[in-house]
Image (cartoon, rainbow, N blue to C red):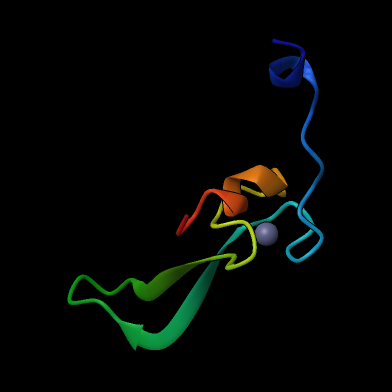
Length: 60
Ligand SMILES: [Zn+2]
């Protein structure tokens, strides 16, 4: 299908970087800094905007 070869638009909310590591300020028992990963809520961590029809089907 042509839609699969066409690049999807970059998510405007995260500018294409949907996952960010956040330091919690604590260290793990092994001495490493503890981080948590947060996904972009707008694109659910994909980095691209989803087709509108994906939302249209939700809850139908
Ligand atoms: Zn995003």
